[in-house]
Each structure stands twice: as C-alpha cells, then as structure tokens.
Length: 340
Ligand SMILES: [Zn+2]
Image (cartoon, rainbow, N blue to C red):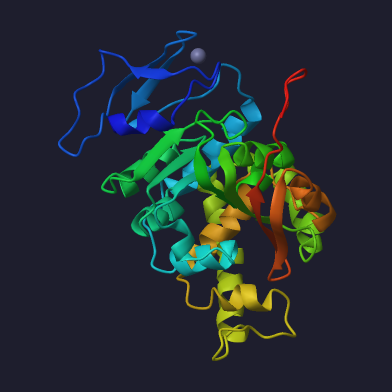
C-alpha cells in the first residue's frame, strides 16, 4: 500500500482513523510500504501490512468466510496470469456499465480475487480503485496492480468493510453469492457509496441453473468442497475436457457472437468458445471448490434494491445469472426536534 491509501481506510472494529506506525518499513521506489503496521487512533487495534497489503480484518470473523476465501485463493495463487478476454467478460457482466463509467471515479470493488477487474478499472483511468478481498489472493491482486498509481488492494471482510463511504461507484462480480448472507453483503457494498453514486453487482441465478442446484450442489457440499485442492484439480480434468470438447463441437458463435439458441447455456458457452482449456478447467474447479454458493431467484435479489435506491435495473444475464445496477439515494435523516 501507499501512504495515500490511508485517506480511504477506517478501522473495521470502531470506524476510527488509521495511522501508519513508526515501525513500518520505508516506502519502496514506487511508493509502496511492503511491511508495517496500521494503528487505530480511537481503539488502538493494530493491523499488519504484509507483502504490500494491509490486513484489515475485524476482531471477530467467521471461519466459514475465511475457509471460502482460502479455497478460492488456492486457485488464484496458481492460475495467476491476467488474460486479454477478461475485459470483454467483465463488461458483459456489468452492462449497462461501460468503460467510460469508470473514468475519473472513486471505485470500490467488493471481492477482487487475483485482481483481474482491479487492473481493468485502474487501466481505464479511475481516479482510484480500492479493491478488497478476504483471502491471500489479495497478495496476487497487489502484484498484478502495484504499478497502477490509482490501485489500492486491501484484505478485509465485505460485511465490515474497513473503508469510508465516499465512493462514486461500487461493484461486486461473482462474490456476493459466496457470502453466508448475500443480501447483507450487497447492503454493505452499497453502504460505502456516496449519495448519488452507483452500485453494481453480478450473481448466480437459480433460474437456468436448476440442474446445478439439484445434481452438482449436493456433491459439492458433501464431497468436493472438502477435498484437498490439488486432488480436486486432478478430478476436474475429465469433466473439463468433456465440457471443452462439447463447447468446441457445438457452441461456435455466429457472426454476432450469439450461441446456438436451441442448446442450454447457448450464449454463455459460445462466449467461451476461444478460451484455452485451463480457463474451462478453472471454471469447473470454481463450481466445485467453494463451501458456500447460493443460486439466487429474481424474487430473492429484487428486494435488495427495493429501498434506498433510484434508477434501478435488474436484468437476467444470459438466462442464468442476475446483473443489478442502482443509484444510491439515502433519505435525509431528521433528528427529532430539529427543523428542515
Ligand atoms: Zn478502532
């Protein structure tokens, strides 16, 4: 982290100001402090800075969340390169948001994994992007983005985000459905946005994925989420090869990039037609590795946006997931007895 990151941060335990401890290492040539400590000026909690990333976890954090994060980190610290097709995929997920919507904005990313979207948004000229993740993948995200002066990677819990509510735009792609309480995760993401700023998310849908909840989920819960990651990675090779062959044989996109309408997941698999095998393998592994995954109905996601927002859009993305976008409008809070 750079010293400038401090203007966005707060103590996750008491929302107090954080200051850099004198024991911290001097800044590197690129401005980053790689090892050190942040201290809360109010409650005196201390937080380590390790490998350039401040670790701002609240005092009480559930084991299931840490386990989910570390299961994903197994993958992200392994497949750690950034690919050129990530940007197209990102803007498919967050549409109608477009590259221009990120320019000169203060952006908060809830759940950054290896930093694939952090790098995209930083490269698009955001004023700043503060990206949070719960697990060790944040160290990979830091390595991928440390050269961007506008990128700030932190370790923290999205349900107690250690940052100020000053952001113009907050987004979370593929993360909220892995939290124990996705609705609370969304509320927490939106709570960091300033009045009039926007919040965007993409989550798994129940609609279009019934077969996963019926046949894959029981296996994931009972078996694959408990297997050692190296073993699961081996197990995933056969189904991933099968899927890769099916995509190559039956899902060639047409000139408009559309997939075959008659086949399940037509556009979704057509979009993956040119992906290398290891990306398909990573997607299969992703589905099976996590202890927590919710597949959400439209009727479950809609209430997230029911109050405190305007200009709300919720769209089905390719029939198997939900993309939401809304503008934050907090009602003015009147103190009893005051006028106006
Ligand atoms: Zn504090």
